[in-house]
Picture 1 (cartoon, rainbow, N blue to C red):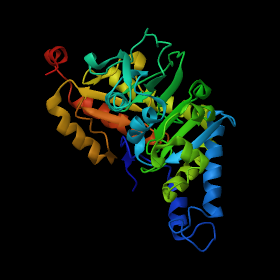
Picture 2: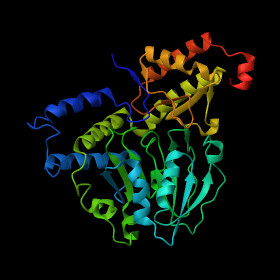
Picture 3: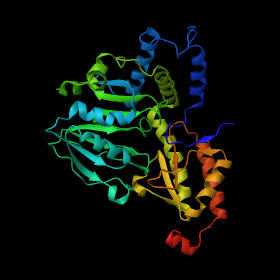
Picture 4: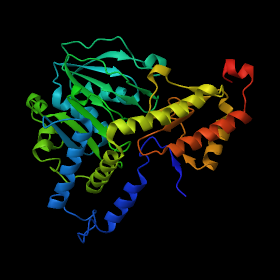
Amino acid sequence: MRKHIFNPGPSVLPVEVLQEASEAVVELNGSGESVLEISHRGKTFEGVVAEAKALVKELLGLGEDYDVLFLQGGASLQFCMVPMNFLNESETAAYADTGTWASKAIKEAKLFGKVDVVASSKAQNYNHIPKGFEVPGTAKYFHITTNNTIYGTQFHRFPESPVLYFADMSSDFLSREIPASKFDLIYAGAQKNVGPAGVTLVVLRKELLKRIDKVLPSMLDYRVFVENDSLYNTPCVFGIYVCLLTLRWLRKKGGLKAIEKINETKAARLYEVIDRHPLYKGHAAKEDRSKMNVVFTLSCPELEGAFLEACTKAGIVGIKGHRSVGGFRASLYNALPLESVTALCEVMEEFAASHQPSSKERVSGV
């Protein structure tokens, strides 16, 4: 029996994708070869890459002025690859610090140039998205992290930028409709909504390549990968193939408009339970709550072990919170079925009914 998988990443994949991928491991489309054995420079895999690129652009509503790359190294490599390509020592990049991954991106950017942190919620343990800030027109580019996996916050309105606009969308990429053409470069680890761990997607405006004015290592140069259609070195062949299957699944579901409605339903159902029971407390400010990562704690921390045990008995896995916040985190990525959210809500309802905190506990949080 399949479990209810709330892992923050690598995350749940569509069952039909897993089934088709497993068949391709034995033989890909009657070719007599496993997808694990095909050449990354053969026509079969070139077709996989071409279709996957086209689907990403179709889903985002982007035209031929954008390119899509399938790289390796995760979003963490992009933290340094972005400034390495686009920031010089005498220049300043603007960053919004909204969580652990944004902070790591800032740290890497400082190796290549100056960084202006134009907004931060660090002092409040990243429990909200900063607002009312301005991006200086003198900055080389502006960088945001659209969804903060650990803290459960998300940009629901994207701030304006008078300069190049870059975004780490690792944990909400292709989960909702966005004005994609607003951004000059988007990057995302595939392992949340697009495929398995090991693949990183980069969507960039082609015009950006003209702005790279320095000699770079080939493996860290966007120009090299665009010129070689993501195939400069041996790519993650199987991972990209699974991404293709997931992209097909997403299009068949109705694209971003349809999946956004499903994701909103899942998040609303879970947040309603959290808000109704005093035992549960959401970490993020309500107006900034993530639709992808629902982070909450218990007003009685000593009950955490019992709650986790109740979830485990119900076949619910992957909800233990990150050490930075504690408590619990339910990741509601695209492929997580509504039935899994219902199962978690039922456990939470039953647990709250049998563990009502006293008035003193509600006030003190002990």
